Amino acid sequence: MTDLSATVSDRGAARWVRGHPWIYRSDVIKAPADPGIARVLDPRGRYLGQALCSPRSEITLRLLDRSDPTIDRAWWAERIRQAQARRVGIDANAWRVVHGEGDGLPSLIVDRYDRWVVVQLLSAGLESVRDDVLAALVAELAPAGLLLRNDVAVRRLEGLPESIELVMGEVPRKIEVREGTVRYLASPWDGQKTGAFLDQRPNRILAESLVPEGGEALDCFSYHGSFALHLAVRAARVIAQDSSGEALARGAENARLNRRDNLEWLEGDAFEVLRDFEHRRRHFDAIVLDPPAFAKSRAAIPEALRGYKEINLRALRLLRPGGFLLTASCSFHIRRPEFMQMLWEAAADSGRVTRLVQLIGQGEDHPEIVTIPETGYLKGAVLQVR
Ligand code: SAH
Image 1 (cartoon, rainbow, N blue to C red):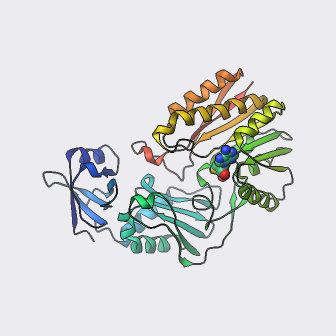
Image 2 (cartoon, helix red, strand yellow):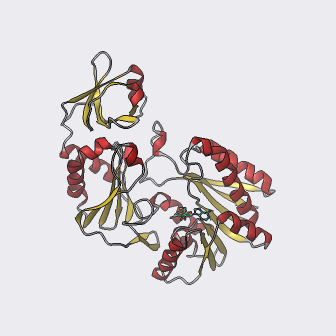
């Protein structure tokens, strides 16, 4: 339906010109009363584009198309095909097929796990065209089953309920995923995000090469052992650490799946575990730090930076000469410059000669558009100490 129209201020219109698809409520002069797809005009009545409209959200408009096509099932299918085409050659059978705004499909998340697909509809505007979107996904991806993981808090800001819903076919409780040389079980119904943290895939594969044959490695904030399993390919011994015993139990199951017996599962708080290792003068050849977002809001940034610095400082001190640290932050509110500044301060305090090996970010299946900061959240680095 394209018979709804909205009018936005010049400032709102300028956002689209500058490459950001959102127009906030404060820049909307007139909007339809109900969620849907709106034709958007500037204050002089000039046509600007079509957008998803969420009347109750602070983000009222999300740009879909600046030309004037009919936004129907075929339109969604074409955008999904374009997203698919950006993802050929991934060395895994699970990846993000649609990364919302990063793929020109605002508020739509689609993750593939082998033959199954897990979807999140994150705005009221998108929810209003749900049938077209889901039909296009089924047609383009031909999944064995499609699950909606709409149990996401941001839906409340859109006036939408949270729910988990099987839309077509069957989706198993556990799906075996292959990632490079490693296999693990994703939990589409009740795992974090849509069942696994797909954004770190290339960094996990990279981690495999950071530990010498027969070395010792530590994976902090391991979840179900995703980095640890890669480290264990060459290491003699890997400690996988997490505060969730339930996640670690699934990690142990993943180790069995890979026929590995060189992993140890350590439940506890990473801050305490790192402090304890330092007291006991334990050392490692490679350490991974992949914590949850410490900064959930702008106000939390200073405290979060102190937390990041503490774990990075301790990890650097625990490394043997020549050892590698792979460190990351998924806090949207902490951008790359602040993260790198924190890391340099940790390196300075550690007293170790620290070399920057590589900057890392989210995988290519999570495209980060530079004019849309919200599409990028994962940043990090690989460091080596002398
Ligand atoms: N590295 C994982 C993802 C980690 S997500 C992967 O690539 O799949 C962050 C993890 O940190 C979660 O599993 C969560 O249980 C754990 N966590 C949160 N707070 C923690 C703490 N203080 N100490 C240790 N683990 C923590």
